[in-house]
Length: 300
Image (cartoon, rainbow, N blue to C red; front, side, top):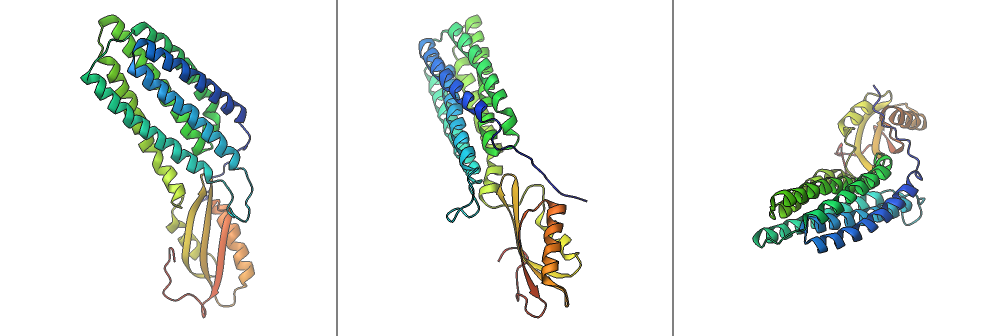
């Protein structure tokens, strides 16, 4: 059974849309900050801060996307693809800092409630919601193929939900005069931001920590190799994510007596590509008489 995971991604797709999304988010941030100050609404300013982080996230994502296309060189022999994971880490870390700051500000506002102009909050947040949904639509397609763009896309989705919370809060303040709803909405926005970051960070960490792909068990690859004709043992195995959509494999193969090393290496590389979609493969062949002693199966 094949374990292939093929991804055909146009590296240039979506660049114009991402640039447009950056411009829209920067404009929206300015409008929300002004509206929040005029209305005296912490939740609207919280939404503006999150929106500003959206713009920064998109700028970082856009720059990383460009850098990732550079070819390998003497300094970066594996290429620049992993920069997208680094950018995603920066974006999620920024989200966590923003989320914690909003929790603090909401707690202070609960202790010292202030009057809020509900109509301004509802109108500005309504405009923000439309912009957030439009921006998310611009980055949705690119988010499917890039952990980096997905981080920026999720910024926008979270901000759209934040705008909904602000609209609800503003409506309740208009109808009932409940000033405490404003910091409550801020806490909801902050909670979602923190939850979102906590669920997405592990995948980014796996890439940066050279972990194996989620959908591919190292033990399965080892077992499959040991079953191949001409192979008597496999050790010193490494299987890791080069970047989000590319895994690499490295191993020592002990060849059976009388096996042609060149033919065996070629056959195993072809097998690993067709069965497990492993394109970056390095195999060191050993004889039974001159193989590594007391070698670990996984790692050195």
